[in-house]
View (cartoon, one colour):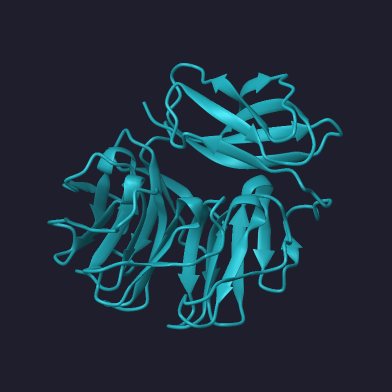
Length: 312
């Protein structure tokens, strides 16, 4: 089955998943339901889709942008936000019939959006960007994550003060003052983390590359405990089109660069010697579009993986 524009649904707690086509030919990055029947999905090229029958059928909404949208969140059936490329923040107050562009004050890609209520919310994105609003998005204020060299892929708050953000290299940040200060937590993995969720202040999970699943106590479920890893890789531009610059930002040389799709299939493998703190340009194969994972391998076999978006 074609994976573009497909959503999966479970009605037995995840034991089985049934695929449904949305009718879209674009990659979808995020989904949110305000109840069991009403939900939205967002993706490449400004795609916003809505369902009112539990995901069986989907209707395209007009976002007013061609920027890729990576996250969507609603506080009720009418009020929601979608965020994406080059600082894009959209808001709707009529269930998605109309979307209005808000001024984020940044050109960084925004990967995640979360609201506690109709007024207070946060977004996270590239170069450690965290923004907060207290007026429903009319104004956004940059918060200091102290992480300017990584991408924050997900943000979630258990209450108005306690929140978490996760991202590149296993980064986990925590705030207990609504985001005024963010403190890095101990690294339980060096795998990039893509999503975080807390059911209360004490219980939460984060998931990421390599099948990584972390629980709040930092025990790892579903993947082996990684060895200590000081590898670091930076990709730019990201999103990329026809080539990407791979920078070995770690203290040791690397010998191989590999590219995988979201199914874990190898798309590209290059034996490239990249000295420490050096970079090289890697041409991307034709026909690629969507989310991929770049793996950098050191001379002693250690690996680090970073997310790459390809847009053509």
